[in-house]
Every structure is written in structure tokens, then in C-alpha cells.
Image (cartoon, rainbow, N blue to C red; front, side):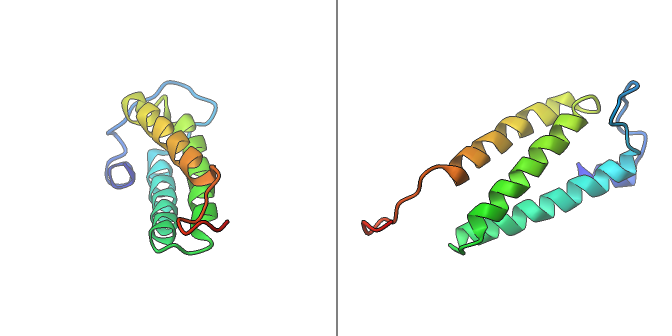
Length: 102
């Protein structure tokens, strides 16, 4: 989404909307949030102490930006919002160590 927003400003159409940005700006927003999600995901996969927090925070930011992107492309934004909620749930639920510790 980020690359298509940066490459072609006429790809998406939207009516008057309170959170209206230039589509190039939306492209950069999607790329930056996507990079934050990748960094958080790499932290979770490598079992870093900061991975779950960064991943949950990045998914929360992604959820907000997808909500603001709904008028531009709802068929993309709505499933991504559901995925962001599932990621937040998975990363913030109670987690125990497999060896029996906390």
C-alpha cells in the first residue's frame, strides 16, 4: 500500500474526509508503520524482551492509521484492522514460560 500510494497519487479516490492527507503522505505513513511492524515482529520471533511491547505498540498505531484510511480503500483497511486487533490480543495476553516459570 505504501509503495502504491507513493508511486501514483491517482490510484485511490476518497470524498471529503476529516483526516484527509495527500496519498503520497499516506504511502509514507504505511511504509513507516510497516517497518515498525517488521521490527517488532523480528523482536518477537527472536524472543527479545522488547519485541512484544514494540509489536503491540506498532499494531496499535497501525490500527489507528487503518481506521483513518478506510475512506480510501475499505476492502484493505477493514481486514487489516481485524489483523491488528488479533496481533494486539496475541502480544498482550498473559504469557508463561514453557519450562514452568513466569
